[in-house]
Image (cartoon, rainbow, N blue to C red):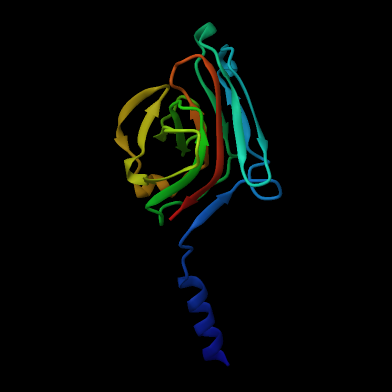
Length: 181
């Protein structure tokens, strides 16, 4: 009996989660995400999100007035260790604007976060797989010249989607899921 318990304990602690998935939709994930726009710094952009049956729709209007220019949707803060994952796959569709998927490991807005561009090619569903080591560090819109590392991936505290192509006008992005592998 002791041997069985020991084997079960070893098996439990050596199992690794091969995927981590955020599946959007009513009764699934996303209801605790939040909109953060440039109005936190005096800008005039506006956006909102709503959960559909099987997806999340993020939409709004970006304004360049008063030094504005971004709208974002972000998960709640909470430490997530992504060091065992090499890629992230996102299924989405939207207006043909340059969105980015972001990963943060710092709470301060001026500290670098890591992002990779999502550029919808049409209004049809697309699935893209991004390599996490290709995510680049940006601080206040400036590329900092280094990429996401497995060490930094250990301390991710928030993820999100941002539209910061510095173009005014309406936008919409619908996301089905985000999956780390």
